Image (cartoon, rainbow, N blue to C red; front, side, top):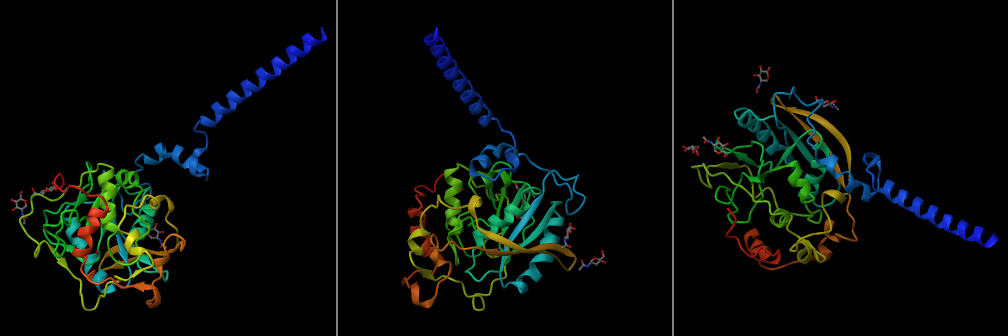
Length: 336
Ligand SMILES: *[C@@H]1O[C@H](CO)[C@@H](O)[C@H](O)[C@H]1NC(C)=O
Ligand SMILES: *[C@@H]1O[C@H](CO)[C@@H](O)[C@H](O)[C@H]1NC(C)=O
Ligand SMILES: *[C@@H]1O[C@H](CO)[C@@H](O)[C@H](O)[C@H]1NC(C)=O
Ligand SMILES: *[C@@H]1O[C@H](CO)[C@@H](O)[C@H](O)[C@H]1NC(C)=O
């Protein structure tokens, strides 16, 4: 009697443990409350919600009559003269196309070297609930041909300043200058790498991200102008020295595809959001202080003592040609 009772009790115990285990597992799989939890795991669970297009509620202008909202993200430091030309030009150019847009000046205010890609990541995070596509836009490149379309890039990223139109860069995998990409595609590739402090190559790494995600880059095909008259390049080479220095192992690291950093781990503070109007164009300045993890990218500061001089890496073209091989871009044929 007693031993039977013991047997029954242990069986009962075992079954209860099993049942509660199953219930716990089941509950942990339910998507409850994932929106406001902080852990990494939950973030991936809530991705589905995150991807739904959110149409502007407060908006910059009454925007109900527009299907799409473009955030023009302009990485920026010390380019006020260029901005004075850029703002009115873009307004005049885009108003003709009936595009609903707002310009965000991504102003890097920390003391580290310029980081165009991280600024774009930060700008994207700031605008992603209200805008469903972005233009990564150089401040010194003004579109002159009205056939250059800034409409929503549905099927894939749209490279406006294509190599056959850009005044300076003509290699076929070039996607810098001006690139339109929709929110879902930018999130799909985890944005841009945060490892590019100093000038150049972040756009080539981004090209490899798009390629790996099988996102085909589209380009203008009805433009009769060429490299000298499609854009106005308001860049003064003599006054604007590019920060081409390479420190520590920067050169090796930045010539490889980065699987470590991106939209999900860009480190920053936005110190201030300022509204500014230049010739009737209202824009928003984000004062962004990037944070550098020196264990990953010690070259965010590059002093003369730890700078490494590579002879012959003066021109971007040379650096990029072997660059694309290092990135594993074997074929450029299926690319137009
Ligand atoms: C040129 O191509 C763009 C993009 O396909 C299109 O939006 C625009 O209407 C075209 N322009 C003309 C004049 O056909
Ligand atoms: C714009 O596109 C149209 C239609 O394809 C073409 O006829 C025209 O030449 C283009 N204009 C310019 C300035 O590129
Ligand atoms: C900037 O402008 C936006 C849109 O008009 C407005 O919502 C926001 O409150 C303004 N911010 C400041 C600091 O004035
Ligand atoms: C600015 O806006 C005012 C009022 O809408 C208008 O009269 C003026 O012409 C505009 N100025 C420019 C430079 O567009």
